[in-house]
Image (cartoon, rainbow, N blue to C red; front, side):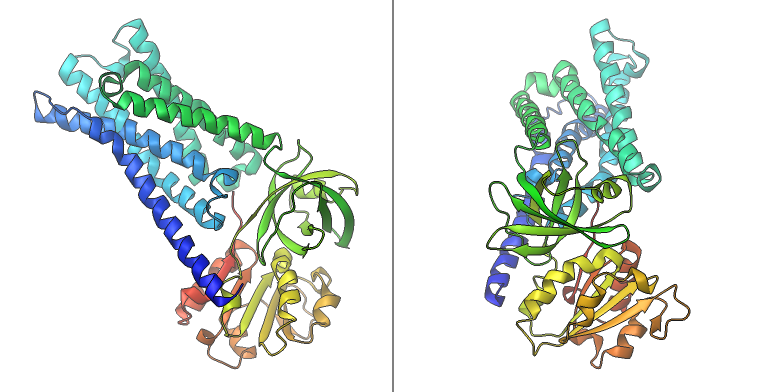
Length: 441
């Protein structure tokens, strides 16, 4: 990607991010314009405003959470999917604080104005049934938020996702609760707004189910399976229909058959003429272990590509420092191919592993004459090269310029990536020159 092309793309990306943020804020606050705050006491006005802000604004934000959390929907509009995912997580941390306003202040409102406590089910049978529906929805959302923020790693992806999917049922209950009991929805133009939200939610659910059925993914056939080393497999596949066109450093979501679990993988090789692409999979859990057994001829489903990793760095004239940890070498395999056409560019690769036999693509790396490769091993006492971990001190030992004159590309375990990014920032490396790839769910 040429510098002018990247600058144009970056400007469009910034504009899309800003537009998305403004759109989320506008649509979330819009329901408040329907409120009738003509109440006999000031306390009732406050209770009503806070209760409606929690229910109406909170529901809009919850719907946005569904859209932001589903890559096939938002990923078509925003290539920087990791930024979208970060926004999704950030909103999720605070959304409960907004949603909890409704049960607290609507209860105070009913106690003062109608002398009944809805939480004690003191209304009619119809009223009490929908109050129970609202309480149940709140409990479901509480479980989803708490497991996502505090217990995600402890639960593991499968258990966490099983809880997370309950939010669909909670949203349906919330929408029904609003139609049944919401005075603002029943007596103002908010009825049409709430109807639109319900239709969007229903359409989104249908769309997501169709994606799960494979209608929105690219169907490919596995053409080659190569064992790189123990528990690491390179899978190559060609499209059965439309071709994907992944840029350098981009990743795809890969699924083995319609019943397989979806996981993100960097495209480690791409052939533009045939559309063949490869991913390199290390066995970490049950899904990646299952992919080690994949056979040629199988049909797989691929969604993407996503991400902007490495694209900005390639448009500058600065020397490039690539830092990889374990399977994090995969984004750089395509980069090596591209940079082979720039033999005068200064390139460095710091590659961290525990032991020597765990180094992936060892022979290929040793044959890269234009790349200064430094292996760093953390659990190989007899190793005569660099041992321990990659730190800024190690970088300075092999780099002959100040760190702020390099572009840094980091891909590895989250702890390693975050520590290096923080250390480089403390060493006065501008954040715009530090690029990382961190997958998350």
